[in-house]
Amino acid sequence: MAKLRPPLVPSNEKVEAEMTDLGTNQSIREQLKIGHKANFKYTQSPTAKALKLHFFISLN
Image 1 (cartoon, rainbow, N blue to C red):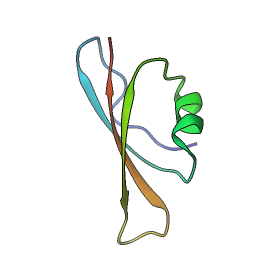
Image 2 (tube, rainbow, N blue to C red; image 1 turned 120 degrees about the vertical axis):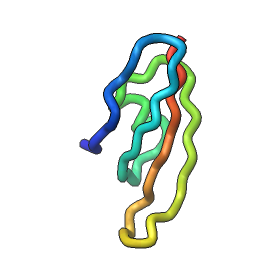
Image 3 (tube, rainbow, N blue to C red; image 1 turned 90 degrees about the vertical axis):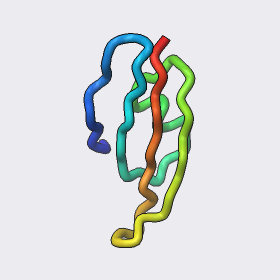
């Protein structure tokens, strides 16, 4: 399981989390039990062969 930081915060705030995962958006969504909209942005980590996944979670 990937590490998340910071923990989820109250409504109307954005959370920036960083995780290393080769899964799809759907599998990550299921792992995090995300029921709301989440925008995913992938970047390649220069020091690791895994994809570094940055995403912002907007809570309603």
